[in-house]
Each structure stands twice: as C-alpha cells, then as structure tokens.
Image (cartoon, rainbow, N blue to C red):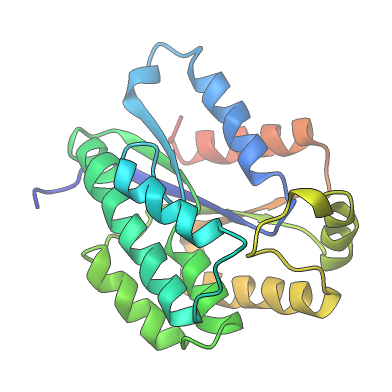
Length: 214
C-alpha cells in the first residue's frame, strides 16, 4: 500500500447523540466550499462504496440474526476492510480528508468490552483487517445515559438488533468509550450532545477549523 498523505477523521458517539445528523450537516456545509472535492464521507457498518460491504451491513443489522459476539466482530472487521479498500485508502492516497461515521473504536467498545469477544481479540482482528490504519483524529459525541434512554424511548419501533434500552448498559457504554478514548489523548475532541444540533454543529466547525481539517 502506498503512503497515505490525507487525514482520516472518525466520528464516534452514544446512541441518539446526533452524530449522523451532524455529519450530514457537515457534508452539506462542505458542499458549499470551493475545496469540496478534497473530502470524502463514509459510514459503518458497510460502505456506500462497496456492494459486498453493504451485504455485510444487512447481516449485522438484521433483527432475525443472533450471532456470537466474535462473529459480529469479524463481520464488522470484514466490512471495515472493504470500506478502507474502496473508499478510505484511495482518498487518503489522493491527499483527501475522509470523515467516517464510526470506525474500529466502536468495535473495541461494543464487541471487545461490552461483548464477550475480548478487547485484545477485537483489537487484533481490526489491526489485521485494517493494516493498522488508525484514525488521525476522533470526534466523540458524548451524552448522559439518562438522556440516551429518554431519546431511545421515542424510537422503539425503529431500532435494530444492536440497540438496547437498559440504563446500566448505557452507563457501561459511556464508560467504555471514555476509557478507550484515553488511548488516543490529543487526537480526540468531545462534543456535548445535550446541546442543540446547531450548537453542536458550530462546536464541530470550530474544532475542525482549529485542526485545519476544513
């Protein structure tokens, strides 16, 4: 693989924290810039750049499937590899900035810490699958567990098999995220998702401009 000169920015967050909506706002904003062709947006699981990765996404999110956690980890890693090959790596080689809605930290947390696959196992799987392609910068959308639960209560009919409704679960989820993010230190910015979407978006723009990412 050739040298990667671009920047890989990943967005992580609690359920209902507004991460995906804010990414859409960012994409719309960047479309107005003269440098818009220097950016690529993608999301996980799956990949809008890979039909095979989208099939993996369908397997992962299907409510009728009940895979062992290690199988989930392997499926996520497989989809992740396909997304890297088809979207991320080509863009980085062209010195572009890639924004990804989730990446391997989600797997470290969900399958490695909250699940029973084991943190070290999941990390190893992902290092192999991704050729150790780490994010250059991470934006975490933080939200108190009680607020998550309240928001999820309004979405019960729209959930997939990966979502939960237990307060203790979200307390553990938030703790796991914050613990994993400690490993990345200066490469992490935290957005307060209890704010309005517009406030969150302005916070994000400020962060990205300070990092010279937009």
